[in-house]
Length: 221
Ligand code: C5P
Image (cartoon, rainbow, N blue to C red; front, side):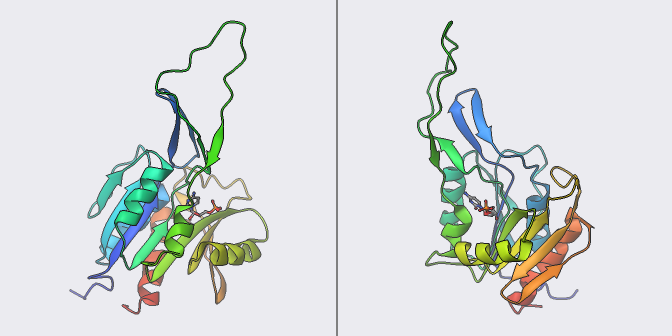
C-alpha cells in the first residue's frame, strides 16, 4: 500500500449550520445540509489525516474514520475548533449564523393577546475562520468557503486577506444549481496564485480534489 500523504497530519473541519436559540423551542439558522463539509472530513481521513469534524445540527450520518463533535451554536463551534489547535489543516465549511439573539429566553416566549411579536435583539457571532486564520497556533493550511454570485475572484481575494486563509472555495450560487442541499457542487478555487475553475462535480469529488490540493500544499504528496 502507498504511504498516505496526510499520515501524521491533524485536521479540523467545520460543517453544517449553527442554530442560535431564541428560546427553548425556537432558533435562527442558515441553510446547510453538511454534505460538503462532511465529505471533506472523510476525504482528508482517507488520505491519512487525523480528522476532527465539528458539526452543527445535520440529518446526515457522522463520516467514517473521523472524530465528530456535535454542537449547536457558533460560540460552541468556535470553542470546539480552538480547543483542537494546534493542527496542520483547518477547513471551515460550516454555514455559521452571522447573528445570534443577544439574550435567549429560558422559557418559551408566549404570544400575548393584543400585543405584537416580541422584538429580537441580535448580536454578532464570532467569525471562526477569521479567528483560526489569525490565531497564534494558525494551521499551515487554512481553507474557507464563500458563497458568491459575482466578482468571484475579487471577492475571493478580499476574503483570503480578511480571513487569513490560504484557499477560498467559492461556490457558484448565482445559477439555479440546486447546490444547497444537493449532491453536486460547482466551485472555483481562489488562492494568492489566482483562480482555478473546477467542473461541476459530485460533492465527494470536490472533497477528494480539495484534500489532494491540501496535501500538495503541505508538501506531503
Ligand atoms: O464571511 P462569509 O460568511 O462569507 O465567509 C464564509 C466562510 O467563513 C466560510 O468558510 C465559513 O465557514 C466561515 N465563517 C466562519 N464563522 C462565521 C462566518 C463564516 O467560520 N461566523
